[in-house]
Image (cartoon, rainbow, N blue to C red; front, side):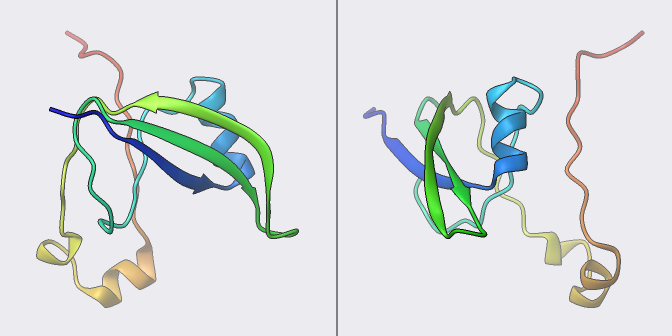
Length: 93
């Protein structure tokens, strides 16, 4: 299996949490090929200046989960309530 290096934009707030190790997941549109062990290069993007800042962080893909939220919720529910991305720590007894 060939490991790919994939470059993706990320806004400053999300970049910072990735950089500091406070975030261990990401939601992306399924418009690119990605597999376990691929490397994502998150490049910080400033939406105000519409430029890259020059900072980047590399993360190895641990698991890929493809989900179609429309199988579970209607577009109007998603628009009205939004979605949550939940991150978990280890199980508790």
